[in-house]
Amino acid sequence: MTDGATQLALAPVMADALARWLDSERATRDRSDHTIRAYQGDLLAFLAFLGEYLGSPALPGTLAGLTQSEMRAFAASERARGFSARSLARRLSATRSFIRWMADRNGFDASKALASRGPKYTRSLPRPLAPAQAQELLELAAETHPQPWIAARDTAVLTLLYGCGLRISEALGLNGADWPLREALTIRGKGGKERQVPVLPVARDAIETYLNRSPWPLERDGPLFRGARGGRLSQPVVSAAMRLLRQGLGLPPTATPHALRHSFATHLLAAGGDLRTIQELLGHASLSTTQVYTGVDDAHLLAIYRAAHPRA
Image (cartoon, rainbow, N blue to C red; front, side, top):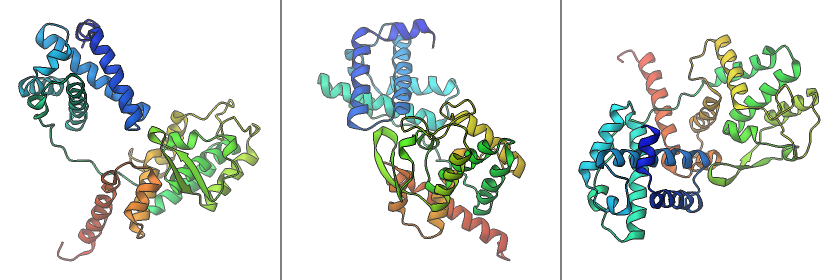
Protein backbone atom coordinates (compact mmCIF):
# COMPACT_ATOMS: atom_id res chain seq x y z
CA MET A 1 0.00 0.00 0.00
CA THR A 2 1.18 3.50 -0.71
CA ASP A 3 1.43 6.22 1.93
CA GLY A 4 -1.38 7.98 0.16
CA ALA A 5 -3.62 4.93 0.46
CA THR A 6 -2.87 4.64 4.16
CA GLN A 7 -3.70 8.33 4.69
CA LEU A 8 -6.92 7.92 2.73
CA ALA A 9 -7.98 4.93 4.80
CA LEU A 10 -7.13 6.33 8.22
CA ALA A 11 -9.73 8.95 9.10
CA PRO A 12 -9.05 10.72 12.44
CA VAL A 13 -11.89 8.90 14.19
CA MET A 14 -10.44 5.56 13.10
CA ALA A 15 -6.90 6.55 14.06
CA ASP A 16 -8.21 7.32 17.55
CA ALA A 17 -10.18 4.06 17.68
CA LEU A 18 -7.14 2.05 16.56
CA ALA A 19 -4.95 3.68 19.22
CA ARG A 20 -7.52 2.93 21.93
CA TRP A 21 -7.91 -0.69 20.80
CA LEU A 22 -4.14 -1.23 20.87
CA ASP A 23 -4.00 0.30 24.35
CA SER A 24 -6.76 -2.09 25.41
CA GLU A 25 -4.92 -5.09 23.98
CA ARG A 26 -1.73 -4.06 25.76
CA ALA A 27 -3.43 -3.43 29.12
CA THR A 28 -6.04 -6.18 29.35
CA ARG A 29 -4.41 -9.00 27.38
CA ASP A 30 -0.75 -8.42 28.28
CA ARG A 31 0.29 -8.17 24.64
CA SER A 32 4.01 -7.64 24.07
CA ASP A 33 5.34 -4.59 22.25
CA HIS A 34 6.21 -6.84 19.31
CA THR A 35 2.62 -8.11 19.11
CA ILE A 36 1.20 -4.59 19.39
CA ARG A 37 3.39 -3.43 16.49
CA ALA A 38 2.26 -6.43 14.43
CA TYR A 39 -1.40 -5.73 15.19
CA GLN A 40 -0.97 -2.08 14.27
CA GLY A 41 0.48 -3.10 10.91
CA ASP A 42 -2.36 -5.57 10.39
CA LEU A 43 -5.06 -2.95 11.00
CA LEU A 44 -3.35 -0.23 8.99
CA ALA A 45 -3.22 -2.65 6.06
CA PHE A 46 -6.90 -3.53 6.52
CA LEU A 47 -8.06 0.08 6.77
CA ALA A 48 -5.90 1.05 3.81
CA PHE A 49 -7.49 -1.76 1.80
CA LEU A 50 -10.99 -0.57 2.71
CA GLY A 51 -10.10 2.97 1.67
CA GLU A 52 -9.02 1.77 -1.77
CA TYR A 53 -11.76 -0.84 -2.13
CA LEU A 54 -14.62 1.46 -1.18
CA GLY A 55 -13.14 4.70 -2.47
CA SER A 56 -13.46 6.62 0.80
CA PRO A 57 -11.89 6.55 4.26
CA ALA A 58 -13.16 3.81 6.54
CA LEU A 59 -15.41 4.99 9.38
CA PRO A 60 -17.23 3.14 12.20
CA GLY A 61 -20.27 3.02 9.94
CA THR A 62 -18.14 1.37 7.26
CA LEU A 63 -17.26 -1.46 9.63
CA ALA A 64 -20.93 -1.85 10.55
CA GLY A 65 -21.75 -2.58 6.92
CA LEU A 66 -19.00 -5.11 6.27
CA THR A 67 -19.89 -8.57 5.03
CA GLN A 68 -17.95 -11.71 4.19
CA SER A 69 -17.50 -10.29 0.69
CA GLU A 70 -15.21 -7.46 1.84
CA MET A 71 -13.34 -9.74 4.22
CA ARG A 72 -12.71 -12.28 1.46
CA ALA A 73 -11.57 -9.51 -0.87
CA PHE A 74 -9.10 -8.34 1.76
CA ALA A 75 -7.80 -11.88 2.23
CA ALA A 76 -7.40 -12.31 -1.53
CA SER A 77 -5.52 -9.00 -1.72
CA GLU A 78 -3.09 -10.08 1.01
CA ARG A 79 -2.54 -13.48 -0.59
CA ALA A 80 -1.74 -11.72 -3.86
CA ARG A 81 0.91 -9.74 -1.99
CA GLY A 82 2.58 -12.99 -1.01
CA PHE A 83 1.33 -13.47 2.55
CA SER A 84 1.66 -17.01 3.84
CA ALA A 85 -1.39 -18.79 5.23
CA ARG A 86 -0.04 -18.43 8.76
CA SER A 87 0.66 -14.68 8.46
CA LEU A 88 -2.70 -14.10 6.82
CA ALA A 89 -4.48 -16.02 9.58
CA ARG A 90 -2.91 -13.75 12.19
CA ARG A 91 -3.77 -10.62 10.19
CA LEU A 92 -7.41 -11.66 9.82
CA SER A 93 -7.60 -12.61 13.49
CA ALA A 94 -6.40 -9.14 14.53
CA THR A 95 -8.86 -7.56 12.10
CA ARG A 96 -11.80 -9.53 13.49
CA SER A 97 -10.79 -8.63 17.05
CA PHE A 98 -10.77 -4.94 16.17
CA ILE A 99 -14.15 -5.17 14.40
CA ARG A 100 -15.64 -7.00 17.39
CA TRP A 101 -14.25 -4.33 19.74
CA MET A 102 -15.70 -1.55 17.57
CA ALA A 103 -19.07 -3.31 17.39
CA ASP A 104 -19.26 -3.57 21.19
CA ARG A 105 -18.56 0.14 21.61
CA ASN A 106 -20.63 1.48 18.75
CA GLY A 107 -23.59 -0.84 19.08
CA PHE A 108 -23.69 -2.45 15.65
CA ASP A 109 -24.05 -6.06 14.53
CA ALA A 110 -20.78 -7.32 13.05
CA SER A 111 -21.85 -10.95 12.67
CA LYS A 112 -21.63 -10.92 8.87
CA ALA A 113 -18.00 -9.79 8.86
CA LEU A 114 -17.07 -11.99 11.82
CA ALA A 115 -18.50 -15.07 10.12
CA SER A 116 -15.49 -15.15 7.80
CA ARG A 117 -12.81 -17.70 8.62
CA GLY A 118 -9.06 -17.47 8.27
CA PRO A 119 -7.07 -19.87 6.09
CA LYS A 120 -6.08 -23.24 7.49
CA TYR A 121 -2.40 -23.90 7.91
CA THR A 122 -0.19 -26.55 9.42
CA ARG A 123 1.80 -25.22 12.34
CA SER A 124 5.46 -25.88 11.69
CA LEU A 125 7.26 -27.85 14.37
CA PRO A 126 10.20 -26.31 16.25
CA ARG A 127 13.62 -27.52 15.14
CA PRO A 128 15.57 -28.35 18.31
CA LEU A 129 19.14 -29.57 18.48
CA ALA A 130 19.91 -33.08 19.66
CA PRO A 131 21.38 -33.21 23.19
CA ALA A 132 24.80 -34.16 21.83
CA GLN A 133 24.68 -31.28 19.34
CA ALA A 134 23.81 -28.79 22.07
CA GLN A 135 26.73 -30.02 24.16
CA GLU A 136 29.13 -29.79 21.21
CA LEU A 137 27.89 -26.29 20.47
CA LEU A 138 28.64 -25.06 24.00
CA GLU A 139 32.06 -26.71 23.98
CA LEU A 140 32.97 -25.10 20.67
CA ALA A 141 31.71 -21.69 21.81
CA ALA A 142 34.28 -21.74 24.60
CA GLU A 143 37.08 -22.12 22.05
CA THR A 144 35.95 -20.12 19.02
CA HIS A 145 36.54 -16.42 19.67
CA PRO A 146 40.18 -15.24 19.85
CA GLN A 147 39.36 -13.02 22.85
CA PRO A 148 38.88 -15.33 25.85
CA TRP A 149 36.38 -13.06 27.60
CA ILE A 150 34.15 -12.91 24.52
CA ALA A 151 34.34 -16.68 24.11
CA ALA A 152 33.33 -17.02 27.76
CA ARG A 153 30.53 -14.50 27.28
CA ASP A 154 29.09 -16.33 24.27
CA THR A 155 29.30 -19.63 26.15
CA ALA A 156 27.50 -18.10 29.14
CA VAL A 157 24.68 -16.65 27.01
CA LEU A 158 24.12 -19.86 25.05
CA THR A 159 24.27 -21.96 28.22
CA LEU A 160 21.60 -19.73 29.75
CA LEU A 161 19.35 -20.11 26.69
CA TYR A 162 19.69 -23.88 26.67
CA GLY A 163 19.84 -24.46 30.43
CA CYS A 164 16.94 -22.17 31.38
CA GLY A 165 14.86 -21.97 28.19
CA LEU A 166 15.06 -18.18 28.06
CA ARG A 167 14.20 -16.06 25.07
CA ILE A 168 17.31 -14.30 23.82
CA SER A 169 15.77 -10.91 24.67
CA GLU A 170 15.23 -12.12 28.25
CA ALA A 171 18.83 -13.26 28.64
CA LEU A 172 20.28 -10.07 27.18
CA GLY A 173 17.94 -7.98 29.31
CA LEU A 174 19.57 -9.17 32.54
CA ASN A 175 21.44 -6.55 34.57
CA GLY A 176 24.21 -6.56 37.12
CA ALA A 177 21.59 -6.48 39.87
CA ASP A 178 20.54 -10.01 38.82
CA TRP A 179 23.96 -11.36 39.80
CA PRO A 180 24.72 -13.55 41.64
CA LEU A 181 22.04 -15.81 40.25
CA ARG A 182 19.99 -17.59 42.88
CA GLU A 183 18.46 -21.03 42.54
CA ALA A 184 15.57 -19.45 40.65
CA LEU A 185 15.68 -16.42 38.38
CA THR A 186 12.76 -14.01 38.09
CA ILE A 187 12.16 -13.32 34.41
CA ARG A 188 9.81 -10.68 33.04
CA GLY A 189 8.64 -12.07 29.72
CA LYS A 190 6.12 -11.12 27.07
CA GLY A 191 3.51 -8.63 28.19
CA GLY A 192 5.40 -8.02 31.43
CA LYS A 193 4.41 -11.44 32.80
CA GLU A 194 6.82 -12.69 35.46
CA ARG A 195 7.90 -16.30 35.96
CA GLN A 196 10.41 -18.16 38.07
CA VAL A 197 13.05 -20.16 36.19
CA PRO A 198 15.39 -22.59 37.99
CA VAL A 199 19.07 -21.90 37.30
CA LEU A 200 21.37 -24.87 36.73
CA PRO A 201 24.81 -24.74 38.40
CA VAL A 202 26.45 -25.08 34.97
CA ALA A 203 24.76 -21.86 33.80
CA ARG A 204 25.78 -20.04 36.99
CA ASP A 205 29.37 -21.28 36.60
CA ALA A 206 29.51 -20.20 32.94
CA ILE A 207 28.37 -16.67 33.83
CA GLU A 208 30.88 -16.47 36.68
CA THR A 209 33.69 -17.48 34.32
CA TYR A 210 32.61 -14.76 31.88
CA LEU A 211 32.45 -12.10 34.61
CA ASN A 212 35.89 -13.04 35.91
CA ARG A 213 37.35 -12.57 32.43
CA SER A 214 35.36 -9.52 31.36
CA PRO A 215 37.31 -6.24 31.14
CA TRP A 216 34.15 -4.33 32.04
CA PRO A 217 33.10 -3.80 35.67
CA LEU A 218 29.81 -5.28 36.77
CA GLU A 219 27.43 -2.41 37.54
CA ARG A 220 24.13 -2.90 39.30
CA ASP A 221 22.19 -0.84 36.73
CA GLY A 222 24.33 -1.90 33.79
CA PRO A 223 23.96 -4.92 31.49
CA LEU A 224 25.09 -8.34 32.66
CA PHE A 225 26.21 -9.25 29.15
CA ARG A 226 28.28 -6.62 27.36
CA GLY A 227 29.34 -6.18 23.77
CA ALA A 228 32.94 -5.63 22.70
CA ARG A 229 32.67 -1.87 23.36
CA GLY A 230 30.98 -2.22 26.72
CA GLY A 231 27.37 -1.59 25.75
CA ARG A 232 24.55 -4.09 26.18
CA LEU A 233 25.14 -7.19 24.07
CA SER A 234 22.80 -7.22 21.06
CA GLN A 235 20.84 -10.04 19.50
CA PRO A 236 22.54 -9.73 16.07
CA VAL A 237 25.94 -10.30 17.71
CA VAL A 238 24.70 -13.49 19.39
CA SER A 239 23.08 -14.63 16.14
CA ALA A 240 26.36 -14.05 14.28
CA ALA A 241 28.27 -16.09 16.86
CA MET A 242 25.69 -18.87 16.56
CA ARG A 243 26.03 -18.81 12.78
CA LEU A 244 29.79 -19.43 13.02
CA LEU A 245 29.25 -22.23 15.51
CA ARG A 246 26.67 -24.06 13.42
CA GLN A 247 28.93 -23.76 10.36
CA GLY A 248 31.77 -25.25 12.36
CA LEU A 249 29.60 -28.17 13.44
CA GLY A 250 27.76 -28.62 10.15
CA LEU A 251 24.37 -27.81 11.67
CA PRO A 252 21.41 -26.59 9.58
CA PRO A 253 20.33 -22.90 9.38
CA THR A 254 17.55 -23.69 11.84
CA ALA A 255 20.20 -23.92 14.59
CA THR A 256 19.59 -20.38 15.83
CA PRO A 257 19.76 -18.98 19.39
CA HIS A 258 16.01 -19.53 19.66
CA ALA A 259 16.52 -23.20 18.74
CA LEU A 260 18.27 -23.59 22.11
CA ARG A 261 15.01 -22.62 23.83
CA HIS A 262 13.23 -25.21 21.68
CA SER A 263 15.91 -27.73 22.67
CA PHE A 264 15.38 -26.95 26.37
CA ALA A 265 11.65 -27.69 26.10
CA THR A 266 11.99 -30.76 23.87
CA HIS A 267 14.69 -32.40 25.98
CA LEU A 268 12.70 -31.80 29.17
CA LEU A 269 9.64 -33.37 27.58
CA ALA A 270 11.63 -36.35 26.33
CA ALA A 271 12.97 -36.88 29.86
CA GLY A 272 9.43 -37.08 31.22
CA GLY A 273 8.81 -33.43 32.04
CA ASP A 274 5.22 -32.38 32.73
CA LEU A 275 3.71 -30.24 29.97
CA ARG A 276 2.16 -27.77 32.43
CA THR A 277 5.50 -27.28 34.16
CA ILE A 278 7.26 -26.73 30.85
CA GLN A 279 4.57 -24.18 29.96
CA GLU A 280 5.34 -22.25 33.15
CA LEU A 281 9.10 -22.43 32.60
CA LEU A 282 8.77 -21.11 29.05
CA GLY A 283 6.28 -18.42 30.03
CA HIS A 284 3.65 -19.48 27.50
CA ALA A 285 0.25 -17.90 28.09
CA SER A 286 -1.54 -20.86 26.50
CA LEU A 287 -0.90 -24.57 26.91
CA SER A 288 -1.63 -25.03 23.20
CA THR A 289 1.59 -23.14 22.45
CA THR A 290 3.59 -25.58 24.57
CA GLN A 291 1.81 -28.63 23.14
CA VAL A 292 3.63 -28.15 19.84
CA TYR A 293 6.63 -29.78 21.52
CA THR A 294 4.71 -33.04 21.85
CA GLY A 295 4.67 -33.09 18.05
CA VAL A 296 8.45 -32.73 18.00
CA ASP A 297 8.84 -35.65 20.40
CA ASP A 298 6.42 -37.81 18.42
CA ALA A 299 8.21 -36.96 15.17
CA HIS A 300 11.55 -37.89 16.75
CA LEU A 301 10.22 -41.25 17.96
CA LEU A 302 8.72 -41.97 14.54
CA ALA A 303 12.03 -41.20 12.84
CA ILE A 304 13.80 -43.63 15.18
CA TYR A 305 11.15 -46.29 14.50
CA ARG A 306 11.44 -45.93 10.74
CA ALA A 307 15.20 -46.12 10.86
CA ALA A 308 15.33 -49.17 13.16
CA HIS A 309 12.27 -51.29 12.45
CA PRO A 310 12.92 -54.00 9.82
CA ARG A 311 9.43 -53.64 8.32
CA ALA A 312 9.32 -49.81 8.33
